[in-house]
Image (cartoon, rainbow, N blue to C red; front, top):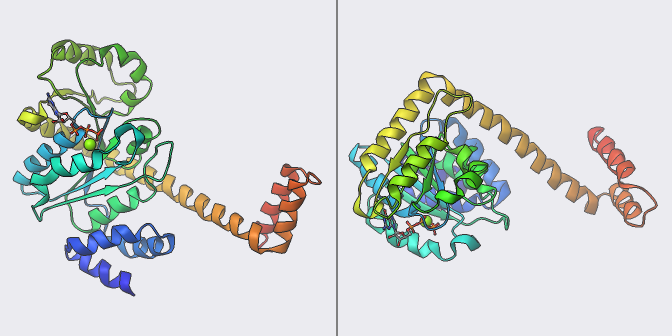
Length: 314
Ligand SMILES: Nc1nc2c(ncn2[C@@H]2O[C@H](COP(=O)(O)OP(=O)(O)OP(=O)(O)O)[C@@H](O)[C@H]2O)c(=O)[nH]1
Ligand SMILES: [Mg+2]
């Protein structure tokens, strides 16, 4: 009952209700209840994923970008994912300070989400939080992740455009990065362009990355976030990418593919939970577990039996 009321308030644009609902996502039962209510109201927001190695200026860049987007009369939601990552230890406080100037604006909603995965990966509630911001009427949603490990791939599964932030001096690593972080970029941002080596890095980036199967050539935009330079160009590149995606029909296609992916993920999670429950609560399942444990049954036979029992509803 409480969630229904909160959802109604959130749909009216109440940021306090939105914050409360994001907290409630941590509990799976309330998460499902909330998401069922909220889903029909989603699909309007445009999501930007901003990723890159630790400390390249992502948060500073985001605060500048948010101010720029606000000047266009659009509202913004920002999610900083993975602030507790060992790679960016302590950045939560730093992010708060950097985002301070924009956080007083009621048209901006900022929230940090801690990840529960040790190996990286988007926090399981990140996708749902994005949908809540969407339903709450934020026009643009920005998700900051540290581009290490699994997160770099996960961001592609939630964002309409992915911005990869790099800095001068990473040149030697381009070949290595090509296999990972680079492949997900729709737009490259060369931040800290005030630093030595910026021109070389810019040229190297421009030469290194040609589109594979797409007609979209990821642009490389130099920025100096601390001095608010290059932000207009960067936003123009975002708008260009969005227009390209819409005109090619790719925006809707990608969103549908992502929904399908998450449908399968959700079913998998639900089944996993169910198996854990059955192994504890149901005598027949417990027995199979015991037999596999004391090697009187091999795990293949055990799994086969359990799947058949689940599918037949016994
Ligand atoms: N010289 C220079 N410094 C910058 C620039 N942009 C950001 N910085 C500084 O770089 C440091 C890191 O900035 P953040 O915005 O916290 O970087 P981040 O990528 O969000 O860091 P994590 O979230 O910890 O990965 C801060 O001290 C910024 O002031 C820039 O364009 N030029
Ligand atoms: Mg940051």
